[in-house]
Length: 561
Image 1 (cartoon, rainbow, N blue to C red):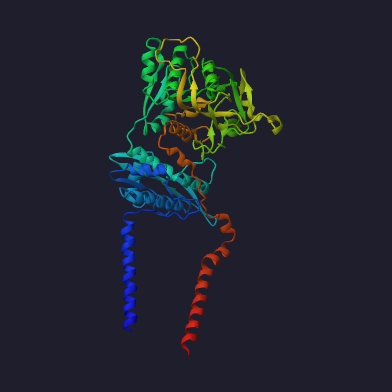
Image 2 (spheres, helix red, strand yellow):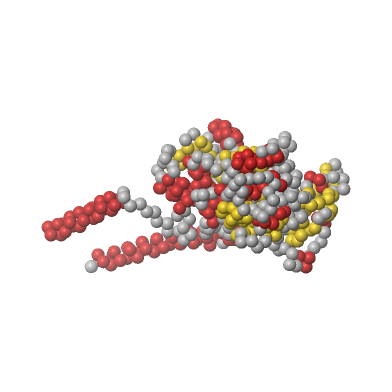
């Protein structure tokens, strides 16, 4: 007995020594193990760099707590587990889940405050074995750091998708949403964005939602090219202080001096986002007694620049069978006008097919009277980000556009070898100046014939960045179509374009993460409800009972001797 006790004490001391050694080593060596197949809890290098910038306490409040529908409980769990992963790498990050509907007296004031901050709830129809009920959920979080505050959207809006599909898409974007918010809070604004003016571009009120979003991360300011006529060199020098120039739906031709300023900005390494309409056609002009308007080419005096850079926007319209819904009056019933949804083919609804991080995991993006883009061979790398569907074609201009087109009958035979027209293209490389071997519009001492490595994105529709206005003249969410009530992914797309052109941290690449998120198929569960109950409840109890009987039998047999 003494020898046995001595041996047990030695074993205990060895175990204690090993545990102490492991704890000591663990204080110097840190590693997290992700056993999921898709590595959904393994943070990207970009996220880790962003987390490392947090020096002071950063608090996150998540407004998803309480009695949630099953899909949102899954979103809540995934959010919690991912935040725990962020917190494991930096203890300055703290978070808590809040139920905005917990206290009936205080909830009304809290809900009003959340509305004021732009955190709108979603109303979900919960179907429990045929019994339907309504639930209000706030799929939002608020992050606060050094007195600054940023909203974090946790639910991604996907038009036409079920709640389950939205949750799957949202989980794929969780790391990006959280890392992006922390980046905005912990990083001082450095990059500068110029909104080009002077050639009839979109007014600020029609770009309000876009500008409000990008100003969270970048310095923005209007930049007017009117001063080019008097002081072209001074204007060029001022423009070179910016990192990105956005040219949104100009309607007036550019002078040669203005073109040289923009050209040399690009040659010096400046990034550009072109949103160009080569055809004059507006949806509002169709709502008249005739229901028709004339679409005609627009001359912006930019064709030679575009050709030199390696692309061409043709003065045609894209007509796509994969259009967007439009409401039109079809008659009257009693004293009320009757409206019906029709497919409007001149407003293509584009779904990305390329895996590029700018468009990956995005839903439908709505265009209005867009033009095809031709890419030309010139040594510049070109990536088609968005293109029309297989069943689309070009419509030459000038031509009459009539609302009666919604009644036309078509077949796949009308679209043989006509579809897949590029409508958004990314160009990367060393561009050559349009004024190479040409007389310069104005004398410039530091003229560059060939530019530094840079990037530009060309979108053949200025309306893609345009938000509509409500009855009070206030801007509605970018991508929201008041006529149909649909919300498209226009905002995410243009924000991704800006982030990609300016992003040095690789944050945009987090969007490329693919997750395999298994969720219950409710329909199958309802169809096999009794069988499901037996498998999930009865079978474990039966197995436990079997083990209990077997254990009792073996015990009796052992000690019966």
